[in-house]
Each structure stands twice: as structure tokens, then as C-alpha cells.
Image 1 (cartoon, rainbow, N blue to C red):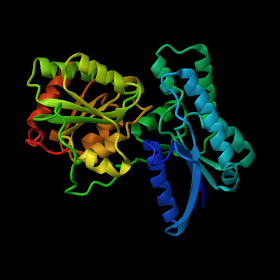
Image 2: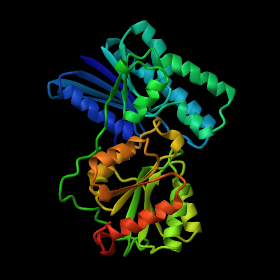
Image 3: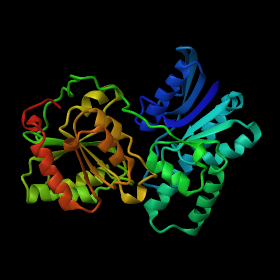
Image 4: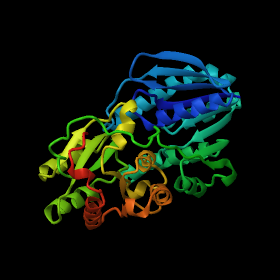
Length: 375
């Protein structure tokens, strides 16, 4: 089979969608397919092709500039330009493909690929990593009329996709709610982006003073609009103001809220160590470095977004604190794959619950956070 896969940022650029896309394409090629993967890079445009197992994999990296995520117009213009360039660059491969598989990032590829496929008649598979424009609607709260109209157009186009790959049961429910035939939906989960073998050593860095002598709670990856921050900030403040203060927070993140969270914690005089996401080759060691991982998700985004970090957090063997709804597959996965004493869920808005969970993390860290382990 000839497969064309379209997505956004490919490694070594930071982006979970591209990491998983590259792994999936390698698997398809190893099984005998001829695969073309077209994505983005912040570096020079390049193309590479190689035999993989019984098939072949061609990876095309299209240069794309950075943009201001906080600026709605800049983000919209970047998305339109980038999607047009991706489709134009991939057109020849699309014409030769048996199946065209596209991810939810960059958003709104659907709006170009469905009309284009009227000419080509290829099998369209939508790996709906994030729902758009539903995420924007949840972000805005009050939805303007033009966006409601655009949403109706999006639903019309989705019904013309042959097959959907949902990341979890919560996304599958969202697709069923908008009238997608259940026979066209497959739940295809991701996994940890990197294997974590037993005995993996933590990162070899000196222990930052903000974390010394504490149980370390890590938030790593993207801290964006879909992630709850207020509940954790207030609960963390209570843990240090009224509790034992034995947990220290490590923010290894980018995204719309990362700077805001850091500023809020420093303004309150709370311990926080800030760093930037590590290269993919160091991710395994990062994941085993802390005593616990933090995952958050606002209720409005349940089923529209599944934080991919959950797989690496579970695979790390460390404790997990999830601030979010039990309707999310984050909760489902953690309950299915973790020992009960290693996982804690707190509802959004329950700051006291966060403070209690932090005390439990401090009690359950087995002493790891109070010795000078290298970070």
C-alpha cells in the first residue's frame, strides 16, 4: 500500500504529534508499505528516503517559521499558509497514495483535504489528535456567530472522512455525539514516545536549590490553554502555607500558560524550578528523574484533547497527580495501568484536594526526593 501521512512538527523539533507520526510511519513501512511522511521543521527543508523492513519510508521536512501563539490573527494566518504549503508539497504523493492519513495538527487540514479528495478519490483517515474548532470554542467560552458557522462546515466535512483514529474512548464519544458512524471509528492509542528500560538513570545535572531536600513534582511538555493551572497553583500554595511543604515543583515546559504559572508561583514565594523541554534523546532520563508527574486538563476540553504525556508518565513508574475529570482517558489509562497507590486524581477547582494529594506524594516518595539525586 502507498500511504501519505501529513502532520506538523517532526523530530528533532518538539511536538508529540510528529514524534508519534514518525513512529507510526516506521511501523507501516516495516510491515511492507511505501510511506511518505510530510511534516514541518524549524531547520532547512530536506528530504530523506530509506528502506525500513519490507517497505520504504520517505520523510519530507518543510521549513516553517515560528509564530506568536498568543496572537489569534498571527496563528490563523500561519495555519492557513502552512496548510496550503503542506498540501501543495504533498500533492504528487497524495495522487499516488492509496490512503491519506492526516493528524489534527496543524489544525484545519481537513478543510483542504476533503475538497481536494473530490478530485483524487483516495481513502481519507483522520487521526483526530485534537478537535478543531472545538478547542477554540472552549478557549473563547462565548462563541461568536462566524465560529458557529465554521463549526457547522467542519462537521459537514468530517462526515466525508472514510475513517477516524481516536486517541481514546473520550474522543470516540465526542465523534459519536456529532453523528459519526461507529463503524468508521477506531481507537488507536499512542504509547510512551520513548522506551524506558529498568534501571534508566536520571538526568546527570546538579540538584537545583529550589528542589533540594524535597519530593520533586514535574510538569513537562506543553502547558497550553487546555490545561488547568489555577487549581494546582492554589493547592500548591496551600501545601506550603498550611501543610508540610515537602513537595517542590519543577516546570519543564513551554506553551501559553508556562510563563504565567512560573510568574504566579514566584509572586507567591513558592519554590519552582523552570527549565525548557529536553531533546528527545534525553526524554527517557527526564521522565524517571522526578518523584511524581503532574498532568492537568480543563473540563471543557475533555474528549477534545488527550494529553499525550500521560503515556510517558505512566511508563516512568513514578507517581502521577491528575487535575481533571474522571471522564477523561487520562483517568482511565492511569487507573488501568498504574498501582492505585501511585495515582491520584483531583477535580478541577478542588485546591484543597491538590494540597492533600501533595502530602500523599511526599509520604509515598520512598525517600527519593530528600536525597541529592542528580537532575
